[in-house]
Length: 107
Image 1 (cartoon, rainbow, N blue to C red):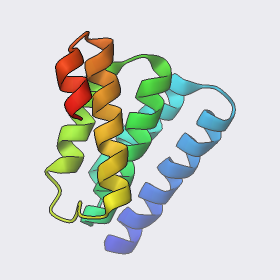
Image 2: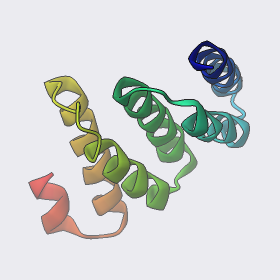
Image 3: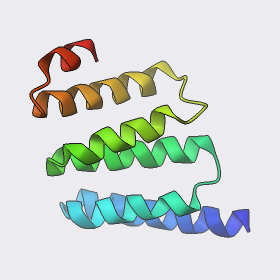
């Protein structure tokens, strides 16, 4: 079953990448969110969150950014400094958009 889940997850990621490359941000968002049900490791969850965050920033949907940063931060293996930096930057942008300037500066 894990191989089937992995194949489905990769398919949704490929769809999301395709839609994102062609400017269909709403469809890319849907495809990336659908991978959530098929994530079998912490690495998959973090990858899904980063994809959703990227598309959400471009769509101007900063509530999704905050939610998915929180989900990624709750993942046990989020220790890579590059991933942590990306998550902090995204959350900083969400705080800026919400006009919470002190919080944005701290992130």
